[in-house]
Image (cartoon, rainbow, N blue to C red; front, side):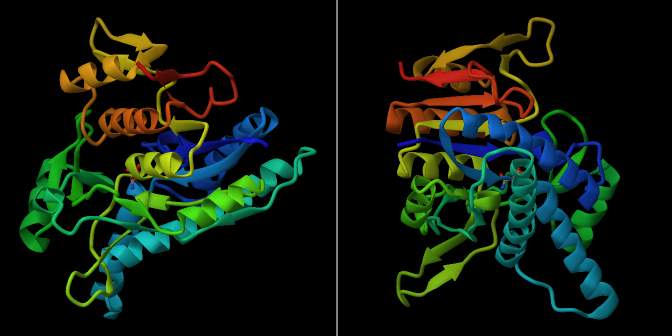
Length: 315
Ligand SMILES: NC(=O)OP(=O)(O)O
């Protein structure tokens, strides 16, 4: 039987930081990324693809605002915006994956699954929003929007500007994970937990499945899915070919390999900032601890190479 790889697409895989996010830009990068994923299929992996939605869901929220202000169209809550982003991005990846395969002898079904993810309604993350979404703002713009709309902003860890932040509870369980497992085991390429999944919880009293306005970290949700379906490898695709310590300092150093113990030590020392490399390292640690299999952090350029990126391995 083929091995299973879960590949979390983020960073440059879909959209570049200096771009406005037109559909042409996103489709171009997505096709380039999907062409690289052909290498994994050739190497004997069945694929589950997951993806981020930070820039896209921020733009959907701004369209919400503009529609309400100009045409009085009712605003949709954030869970619906996350579902919209899963539909749009999932469709785009599905189509570009089919385009990438059309130039090869490989033919697979590709299906995008709208995925809900259970969270804990008492998660302290609801008291401290940390997940950056949408575009960058100047300090003046951020202060103005904060005063007028009550939005919360935080400065980007790489000092590129200020971004709106929303609560980001931990993923607890993935709905339909068994269906995803069965589909990928049959060789279908499954796109799931887009944007970290739509956050939902079971109401204690009504036993009703409720939605909550938040954005789950896609690396943590992807890692959880990868563990639950017992993936053989978990790839986290980001903007850099390898993980660095002392990133962007004179003594920065690329890492080829990290044991879980080493990764935890460097994480505790603050080497990996929150909202950036931090959740990727955490997701990798959790996957490796639960499965004993390897996680790899790299960029879309490198993924088809067998020894690419930084490998996080059992201690
Ligand atoms: N939901 C999420 O983590 O998206 P990004 O990776 O785009 O921030």
